[in-house]
Length: 251
Length: 334
Image 1 (cartoon, rainbow over the protein chains, first blue to last red):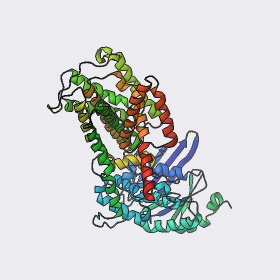
Image 2: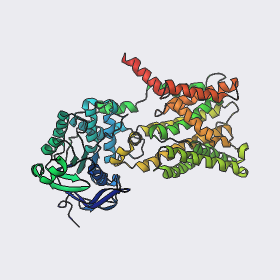
Image 3: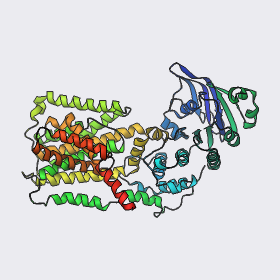
Image 4: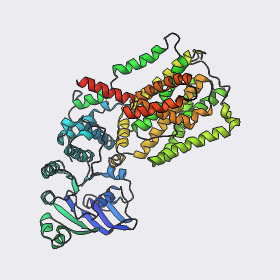
């Protein structure tokens, strides 16, 4: 067997994915190195979000394999993959609207720690979880909003909570599907600046359309187009790559 | 690894106070239960009616666990009420006349069948869920009607005996023992439900109600939790059914009719979901109104219940208890 420490954290081998007659991927191969901050870019319909779905298990490939730490996880449930260390955020906020950020984060922590089994023990007795939730909300600048109902929070704060929930799981691999979607340019940069600090020890794979953010925060970039990985390289090389200009930048 | 410094648990942070506050007993909660006990001492109180209210409140509370906390609608919840009712009936008819153990057995049986139902519906949602729960209710109702040799058919199960509670308190014709017995059992089950919904498991139920997809991506065993809460709700409904059988020494197919499933849903919606107390307030309004309207116009009282529902949905969309809470909040803010 491969040593998990030396194998890539994530690998896709010959992935084939079709929704009915619509083929999204044919023979997709992809490798993600441990510790990378890796951006996936590509035009709409390139299969970026589908790829995240395949990695997290919300979608299953028609054929091919997904490997995490060198282990085939293609047939594992999303929950098993979360337990293994994969977490994701959604392009469109996917939050607990009627609950507040504090309760939301405690839910995530209780799942991570396996503390959500049937019991008659009040949440208030989970001091450790509550303290950690509190600390996390402070980190994400949500401390003042901890007790505000989520759906009444400004969009930017909800976006932070979206990331905080995934981050609360202490994943090895964090998948961010357009984290800056809907944010202003300034807010987007602020979010990425915070993320860069918070996720210094985590492998991050993010989908992003804003090229400024990509070139500034990614240390590797993959370009998807029409269900294939066109090229994978450093931001500098990507910027000048002729194929990229052709498929993506449109010049 | 992100090492989050973990300070010694500080009970005074707003965060820990928030959850402690959720678990704390409010004055009105205590008053509510004291008032229910107080009814017993009111001269000439209609205790049989109040007993029914308490039992229906328990029944609606069991549905609240499912609908209010987990967001699972059921059109067939009376199936479990009926299972508990008939189980208690058969026990009493065939010699197991000790009420508390009979009630526990009936509730456990309903819980087991609820667990199996939960396994069946754990992957179903939305309209399909309504159809499946309704279908199960109709099947059970039909079986009880057809097997009239076993169940007494429409005439119901006769000759049910119930021993004195704790060997001391005989069920009397004024319904005094029945009322206190129903109230005591309901209170104990309420305490369990209250603790459950304020536990991390209860929080996970709320999370799954709000956003099942996100719960999956937090690693939550969504399907197992559905089965679990279904079993618990069914057991509580079964306990309510058993209480009704034991306190009236009678059980008939109406206890698991579709009408009963609809009534309990109406009660919960009138009172308000996701509050536990909404179930009891709804039961109070519904049964008092039914009692009163049935005297005014014995045939057409459902007309008024229907009208009440329409008015409720138009003006107090979330039900009585949540509307009152909103009112209190508004008054306090001033």
